[in-house]
Image (tube, rainbow, N blue to C red; front, side):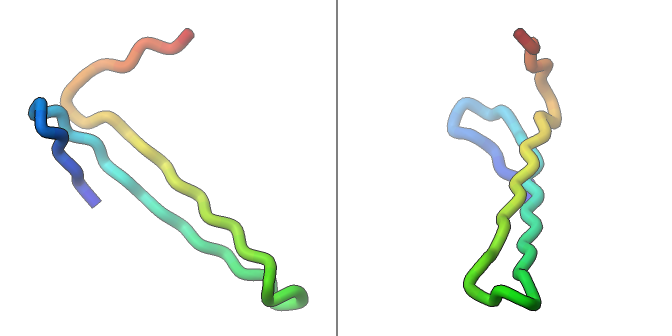
Length: 43
C-alpha cells in the first residue's frame, strides 16, 4: 500500500500476517515501511 503524508512524503507499507496451525490463538503481524521519495538516515 502506498501512503502519502500531509507533508507530501510517500512511504510503501507492506503487511504480512501469519497464524500458527498448531496454536490458532497465536498470530504474528510483520509490517515493513519503506520510504519512496526521501532518504532516511540510520543511526
